[in-house]
Image 1 (cartoon, helix red, strand yellow):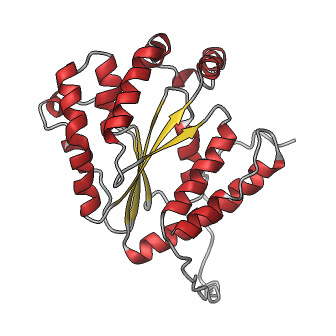
Image 2 (cartoon, helix red, strand yellow):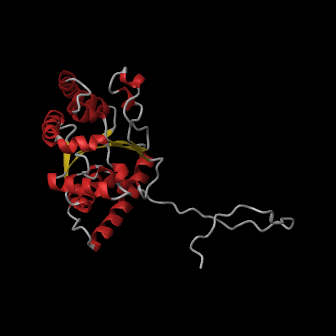
Image 3 (cartoon, helix red, strand yellow):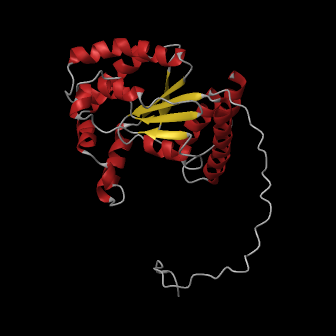
Length: 273
């Protein structure tokens, strides 16, 4: 496993705007397809968890991981704020239902670490509850891992200047304005509160069995390549031989078949000359 990881991590030489990025991303997405085939064949269960600063690029990495694979194997879980009913449940309860079955990879875009992060800083939970939660979380993750699930945790970092640049891009670009939430604005203003919360969160939940992997993401493209490469290097998958199917020949057109020529609604061709 170590050798495989070294091999994966040794390859990226991408910089923003370079042709190397597209080439390397394509190569890694082919490997993700091989990983998918192995997961389906072996019945492996994998959880990949993404946390990090707002505007650090979690969505971009997740998009590149899943864009060329099956959504039935790679499932994204991005839970909204808890409902009134969920607020009365054990906090971990709503996450347990989303853990993978055999042959699945579940990607958490935010996770159970919302409590010691956003909820703690914004006052949605008490300081006492947050600290107690941090003490219990490693035990919860031990339970997940001991059940046979592979758990991989990534935390994306971004500098203050780069985060501000990305926030201002969201404000000015109609295609990005949906990304800007009141929580994002609060995280911008309360940078140091979030810094302290995340520092303690990582310190208390970074264990040999369930370590955090930090992804510097001031350079988005480099972060994507590095993170996907590391993910592939962490999972000891093997390439599964693809059995090419014989698609055979089409049936002959039946003698009695007459095409239906009744009027139909056809989407207009807006590009026609």
